[in-house]
Image (cartoon, rainbow, N blue to C red):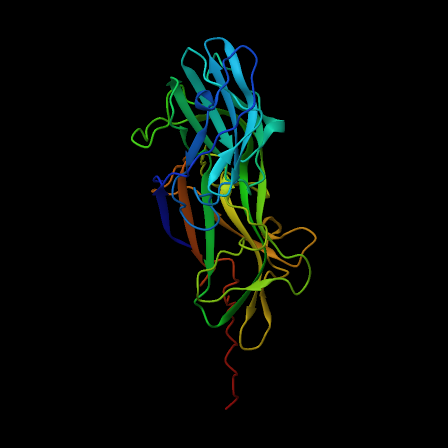
Length: 345
């Protein structure tokens, strides 16, 4: 069963020192003082491998002034304690709007200055902590342009355990099922400042509903045996936890297939003392069997009374303790009574 859910909002960390570049851009008066430079901050991590201000390595910037694009997908890279890019961009006489995302996913982006920009048809593999930042109507300044980044994804982790010492549960695969893997991200039309947490981007045109593996045993012997300690088995395996924000649906069984948003654990269950396999067996219904595998599948709803959707910038931890799974065959009885033996007197 799923014992509890936890979701955390992201907060803001400290700033990184900026740096400048000296190259020229046509139509401006280039000088060291006129160069646009950057600093960047990110939210504090929820847990695991979420990006922090200290671990961010690069971000991509688009900048517009009125109808003119002055930075067109420029990659800004950390250089020690500084941020550098080339060629240099220089301040115009009119205010500038800056849009940025991290990490560098240039091949999948299309930024439009008149609408504030978007990232179309972003295909999520679950391993990228996509961040975004907007700074609007910035006039020429000596200080670096502060890009305050926010998480564009939800973070979903599954902690598995078993406290039933009579059972040995060997897990081969863990999946998030019937979730959207592709969508378009839309930048907000306002500055994502640390003191305006309600200014957020949005996801639209969600599609490619499918299953996403979070743990995979490569071969026989690579399965994991659950212990009484809740463990996130995707870490150092597939490292999949960053999910497109989306509404979750109730789980139902239609024929031999489950519908809705759910977590699936492919496993085998053994009697711990004898080593005898107790599930799945020849009596297990086909909808609980994993094709081309010796495993059965346990299904846990992703939706609950506490969580009806995975929201951007929130982390969700599912604690799944497999102690008394209801898929195990119960002991059945078929009762007959022998007739009395009649003794002749």
